[in-house]
Image (tube, rainbow over all chains, first blue to last red; front, side, top):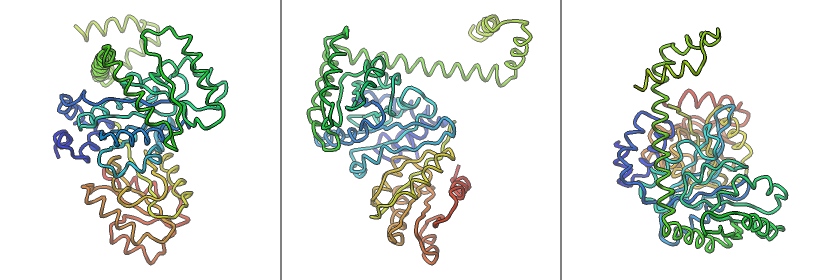
Length: 312
Length: 131
């Protein structure tokens, strides 16, 4: 099967196989990306992040239903952690999304982080592109449950939603410096629990102290995701943010930066692979390490010599 | 290349007991597989579609209600109809020995009954997933 062509024709199995090729770095992955790239850039990417147990998957499910009721097609990439010890993973986000499984307008894919520490996997961005080329209108990227610094989602998403829940007490202070800085909007889930209003006040206080680069002040929406309460309003906020960044050029700026970063990543990994082939696989690295151990030379001198040799 | 074996652990039908499925899921995780668990009370259609979207190598089903003669073969047929010819489909749960030949005939590669060491399931998957 010509995976890229079939994907563009709307074949769901081809989309699925394409994401596998991307994730596993199969030999044909680059060829698939080349063919689908011209068809990307149309979808809007909504990132959903927050601590474990905040209700990200349940919220994703409800948001997807809301978009479907507006007639939009939805792709979902749900990331869960890979064990650093065994490489295995339990990907359990679909449990909250079963009512979407048989909707042909929705495609859900679970991914393990596979060693990436930023809350996504290294291949999430390319998986987003596959869903984009397939024709999904909205792509929701749900991160792993995050703590302080897993902020890769801002690089992948057009709008980033940070989901928090009441009752985390002083933990709110602890995560202040990390994920709270990246929210284009804040969702307080489980808002029927005690402490929801207190949490809203705390976030507002934090926002009061922010020196905003723009005049967008992230709104705070209270929802009860498992009851579906507040979802319509929440989607309205996402729409507002989208219109705001489309209107002032911020979306173009974000996407330009993303394109630059992606190209640099590909170049870096190509150069890394070239170096490995030339230095590691030939055994030269081992010889050099011996010289370093004997203090016959130093790593910087070696690096100077090698880079000028390789990159002339 | 970083090929990983992906397994869908699924609970078809109406029984509400997934302790066994969770133990197996955990063992498969510890064996280095990516395990997609979809929760209780799945229809065969949901299981087959999840298998397609997740591009799994294995569908592992657990049934404790006695509905396996009906549900297991249905999942096999739906998965094959979707073009996933190589997917290994296995089953487990409270399944009488006398039912096993018919399930295998229907395309269930292996049936694991109560008392099976989880390592046997891991070994079977490692030996039978097509690279």
